[in-house]
Image 1 (cartoon, rainbow, N blue to C red):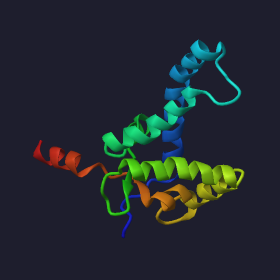
Image 2: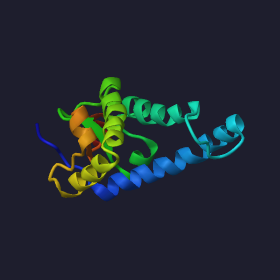
Image 3: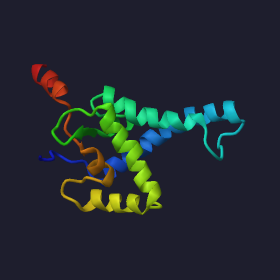
Image 4: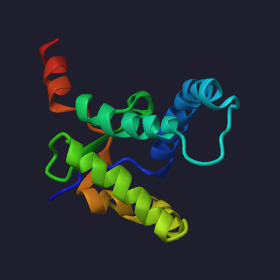
Length: 147
């Protein structure tokens, strides 16, 4: 299967930064309400909301999160189809577990993979069978052609 218009390291990093900033304020405020401080050591139910955002939003919004939409990139399956819940669970949860088990070395390797590979796929992309592309969804291309 062929990768079309893959998004590179800087695009992907920029989207992660935008999403991180977007989530930091509301999740931090929720943490203050629950725990009494902006930062909380240990597990908090608020931590799950970041995963809900990263898993659910791409499923219902053609592979976009707010950060990805602003940067103009989205996640798709290797066959070009939109991602589903199973795909996003593999990508986010299993990918994160791999990065934790490897003590962050996997994350560094992934950064180099995105920067150096022609298809720009990271470890979590291989786990889930996805890639990040600059191409808009077909539905949006058809709407643009009609206008």
